[in-house]
Length: 181
Image 1 (cartoon, rainbow, N blue to C red):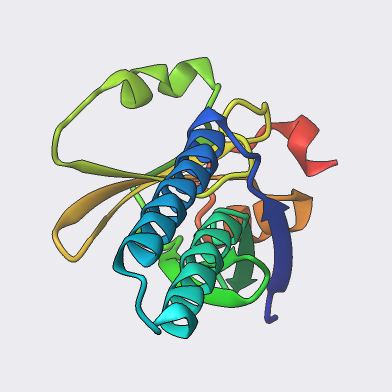
Image 2 (cartoon, one colour):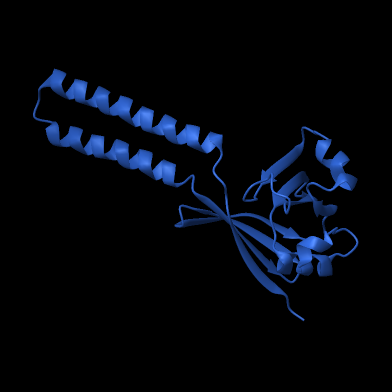
């Protein structure tokens, strides 16, 4: 029997995202002011070029700010979870593909039985936060080795995806019963 589930999570904006937006606006204002000063200092017939540069600066700032609007799409197909990052509802990028038959462990991030794994701060562990909000109760983590690199992936599945990954590898996947409802 084939299993196919999709689920999308909107990434909650954090202080870092807001600071980046404020920094980009301040940088655009500073570059605009500098451009205007240069334009009036030179007093040449290059007003059209300066205007295009000014529009380009603000377009770039808005573009970069919008790219911070993230959503994550989880697609489970027969025990393989593909996680895509969607930026500004226009660009999609595959972040990771996880075959649940090859994982070390999958469990709730706030499960006390696995707290020692999360507190272990190995420098060679690559941590990917692909959840809407890592502080929520329904966030799970997966540890796996992929291409010689140890990954710890945080994600926020729904009940259908949890059922599918539990079927793929029941020994390595720990699921809270409350999350299956």
